[in-house]
Length: 452
Ligand SMILES: Nc1nc2c(ncn2[C@@H]2O[C@H](COP(=O)(O)OP(=O)(O)OP(=O)(O)O)[C@@H](O)[C@H]2O)c(=O)[nH]1
Ligand SMILES: [Mg+2]
Image (cartoon, rainbow, N blue to C red; front, side):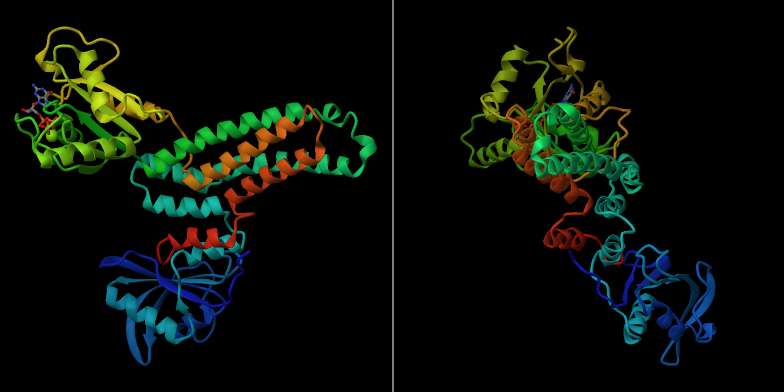
């Protein structure tokens, strides 16, 4: 396990650039002494804990700024160490001078995420909560922010904690029984081990589903628009983006390059990709566009397939589209949303296999957004916490070991059962940071911003 160093660290905690206020944060044993050096008003004494104090900052006989000082003595601070925060005027020069003065007085620059890392190492927050802070800061939608706050409040960690506790109890039972072979005979039935395993499997599957939704809300999804030339893909992209991002003409083959736009659709962060209309062509530029469209479709989480309402046979046109995109015979079926566009031009009703829309008038577009959300498991009432791929991977590993544990039951292979439960326990512990390898911890925190 990574160990704490005793350096005092310092960083600007507010974003770069000018602002009304800028915050410089110190954490570590020398924090209070350094604030004493910079703020003569303290008269060499530590600042009053948890009270905003008006101070003048000086260094080397020169005034830096007037501002507020907040002192949080450890362990009751964010990092668990002594923490000092200066609220100053948000000038990059002032903040840099303060930083330099703190460094000259004994602090060193914090690495990205080092404050959160220290909070984690001092057991102030677990790994999921540390990640939730970074996710909250980076959240691209209200839904993502709400979900990050839930993860930060410990909702996800509590679910994992409950699974860890149950797995642990079973491990203790199984391992104790292995040590007393005379107990082994009716052990599984006596302690309802098969039932306990089954209920653990259900709970784990539920958590995995929730985490999948949490990752979707947190990281967003890629949605590709595909269709024959002139089906209205670029028009739909413009409609969803609320701006004229893509060129629209009535000439088939207008779009060649991939055009990617980041949007938030009903709280879901989406990277929307417009593609070249799929058709056989001799034009080398368009051919390259079609090839890129096919590749992009395979990468997307959801593919919106546009069929022109004025086409003769929609079902045939849709089939042809899937063939052209190379999706017809694809083994791993991506999520497809079949859509009939230009419904403003027709009078007959649209078969239920297709969603009728008009990129031109906007009819059906709200329903399309809701359909895409539902395709990735989100409903208007989803109240999940944010999650990351790392959590999902660990839950899958835990779930695989639990399945293997269940297989050991018919033959009462207690040693194997114990081993599989140990692996399950280990994988779950990795989520909250109990059994996470140092390398992985380092990688997680290095992706945080400086000052966090
Ligand atoms: N009436 C009507 N016309 C539409 C609708 N959507 C698109 N169009 C028209 O259809 C033509 C083609 O639209 P685009 O959005 O450029 O179609 P595209 O699928 O991007 O075409 P390519 O880039 O060539 O593959 C344009 O003249 C649009 O104005 C719609 O919902 N209703
Ligand atoms: Mg286009």
